[in-house]
Image (cartoon, rainbow, N blue to C red; front, top):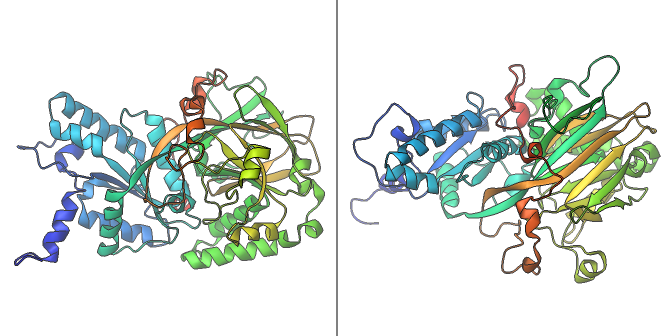
Amino acid sequence: MDIGTTSVDLDSHKIKQFYIPNYILEPDSESDSWPDIPECPVLVFINSKSGGQLGGELLITYRSILNNKQVFDLGEEAPDSVLRRIFLDLERLKNNGDEFAQELKKKLKIIVAGGDGTAGWLLGVVSDLKLSQPPPIATVPLGTGNNLPFAFGWGKKNPGTDRASVLAFLDQVHKAKEMKIDSWHILMRMRAPKEGSCDPIAPLELPHSLHAFNRVSSTDDLNVEGCHTFRGGFWNYFSMGMDAQVSYAFHTERKLNPEKFKNQLVNQSTYAKLGCSQGWFLAPIFHPSSRNMAQLCKVKIMKRHGDWQDLTIPHSIRSIVCLNLPSFSGGLNPWGTPNSNKRRDRDLTPPFVDDGLLEIVGFRDAWHGLVLLAPSGHGTRLAQAHRIRFEFHKGGANETYMRIDGEPWKQPLPVDDETVVVEISHLGQVKMLAVQDCRSRSILEPSSPINQEVDERDSDNEDDSVGEEWKKFGAADTFKIPDEVDISRLS
């Protein structure tokens, strides 16, 4: 260290790399001269109620290090209004010849701290705003599962909230690489009931990750006469069956007794106990065959555009996971890496995050899930698909459990000669920030064995059967957190 140089000076130099000046963040403020362009300007969004007390502590630390106007509490201001305002101001300043604003817009990055639901909210907003230069997103793990952060190398344990920990994380963001990941649209349609509520579940139980999981507008081309239609989107996974039921029990218990869920270790141990108490380790004894996926629904998949095929589900499968990222249930990888024989005989590939395909995996019971703890363990590989359709008809079960990116709900099933349809389709892509050696892999990486075989139609989403309404999540346009909803539910 040079004479006269202190650790405070070094910290100050680091912070300048991420700092955004007031005149960018406040339309009415002016700057006499342009400051030096930061190397890695960031906007920080924090769910202050996520991770027990950690969210609030992290908010205070970030605001003490950066300009407090570039650090936003999601409990106070929605990200769509923040990003609209800032990007409109950047565009105005750029049109007025402000070279600083122009360069800052090119280098801008987003940090979001919260659970997978919070991260999904930000991803949906950035997708829906259709920005000309959408900023890549880094995720700070503050939830219970933290699958999104783990998949991109940010860890799955709650981070430190002190100054040194935050500076270390900012340094990682500065060095991170950009990766594109697929995003997925989900549609659910059911016959409108002749009387009573038209909503399938109570409004406060709707999963946040579904964003626009409200009735679509009367002008929406997804509407079908006599039916209620719902839509939303996800990045990590959609699952249904036993894993979603355990998750639903956990979320219900946490909502009833929030004081018992302030610690990540306690949360995870409670989760494990619920899996045992609900009998999923002895599923053939405690759960009737009507709970098996083959009994509940018919499944169709589309691997190539326009080519629907029936997917055969083994009768022992009680849980299905449609996986986009190689991280599920706190960092497990249900798909694994198929060997060369599987690739040749069953047309299976490794799990790339940008290949326009979902990996569909099945599980028989909780014991089957434990094989994921082995180095090469995996679930039952069912298929990979660009589009998936589940059809539920009247059967032996009145409801099933579904989950999207960690947010579960209880879904009623048909009781008459009606059909509930859930359809998942490729939507587009969004940019993430990733640690250099993260577990997520791109099909475009030189080391990929099939990087030359990527179907560009998947990336461009040029499917004639997909209307304009399929190409957004509704996170920016229609999603609002009701006043009565506690934002801590999103952790």
